[in-house]
Amino acid sequence: MIQGLIFDLDGVIVDTARYHYLAWKKLADELDFHFSESQNEALKGVSRMHALEILLQIGGVQASEEKKLDWAERKNVWYRQYLKTLTPNDILPGVLEFLREAKERRYKTALGSASKNARTILDQLEIIDYFDFIADGTMTQKAKPDPEVFLLAAEGILCPPKDCLVFEDALAGVQAARNAGMKVVGIGNPSVLEKADMIFPGFKNLHLADLEALCQ
Image (cartoon, rainbow, N blue to C red):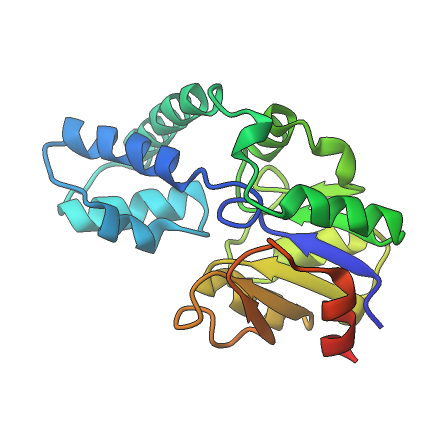
C-alpha cells in the first residue's frame, strides 16, 4: 500500500533544465567549445560533478580536480542567479493541485533530488511547506541511478521503500527508484521512461485515486 510520495525536482515540479543548460553553456563557451541543448540531455538527473565530467568529455577538456571544483562552483553561481527569476508561476501544470490533494489525503511527501539548490528552488516557488522531508544533493554521496537519495527520502518520512511511490522524469531517476525497491511514475516521454511502472505526460488532470488503483 502506497503511503509515501517522493518527487524529483527538475522536470517534475519545475523545469529548471533551461537554466542548467544556460549555465553549462556559459562554461563551455569560456572553455572554447560548442555545447548544444541535445547534448545537455545527458546531464539531466545526475550530480553537478558528474555533469561536469560529461561536459568536459564532450569538449575534450582535461583538468585538475582543483580546477574542476572551481568550474563547478562558477557554474552553480550562474545557475543560482538564473534561479532568482523563478516564481510560483513556474510550477509545472497540475503539480500544485496534486500536492494539495496529497496533503488532504494525508500522504507523507518528500523531495528526492540531486540538486544542491533544492531548498532555494522550493522557496522561490513558495511550496516548501508541502514537503515533510527534503533529501537533496547536500546529503548524498552517490548519484542516480544509485538509490541513495530515494532511500534517504523514505527514511526521512519514516516510510518503507516498498510503500513509496516516486515521480521521475529521467531514466537515471527511474532506475534509482527501482533500485530502491520503490514503484515509480514516469513523468514525460514514454520512450525514455519505459522502465517506469506507469507513465503520464504531466500532472495536469492526474489524481491520486488514479494512481492508487494502478498500484493495487
